[in-house]
Image 1 (cartoon, rainbow over the protein chains, first blue to last red):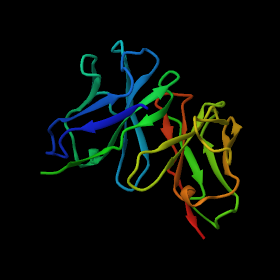
Image 2: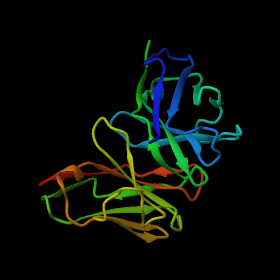
Image 3: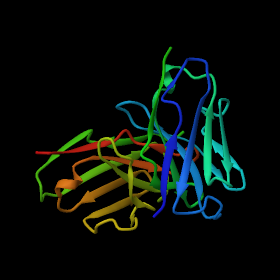
Image 4: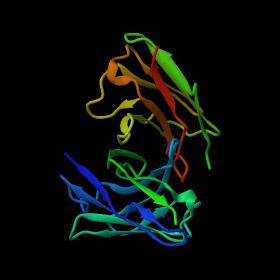
Length: 120
Length: 107
């Protein structure tokens, strides 16, 4: 059974960088069959797909966040990471990591999510 | 980007009854549509992909239909664990986008 778990600071100051890591267990991030995704959910609202990364390092970012977001993969630790720069209160959300099937099209395994609050 | 609109926002149903949830896309997404279920404080769970293909271990009471711009998730006989929020998501055009959700509550 694949499990994903997000980790990182729960509070980030405005204008700073949000950094999260997703640890994957029960399967290899380098299997080559899946795309590793970040999806966020603003409090009480819907879901927003931030983007995804293939184990080769190829990335796909949501155009609305593309200028501020960077994904990376650490195969030795079976982890992938998100960095979001210049955050504002609008970036306050629960951040989920997920495994996506197809060409990163739909997510079949999700992490529980971690709440990141942007506040001074 | 493609806008996904779900209706109704809230659906009140008695246990054992049938529920039909609607999802509409602002342009055709072919059959590139998924449905998820989310309980409070939990991660979403994939129910359906390809508009009508049940994901692994999803009970047969969940079914999806539609193509193009109109889609329906049907729950044939609601069980207690089915009262949750349901989201549709298109993956025809990047960025993938979700509907705003339909909450299925106990009547």
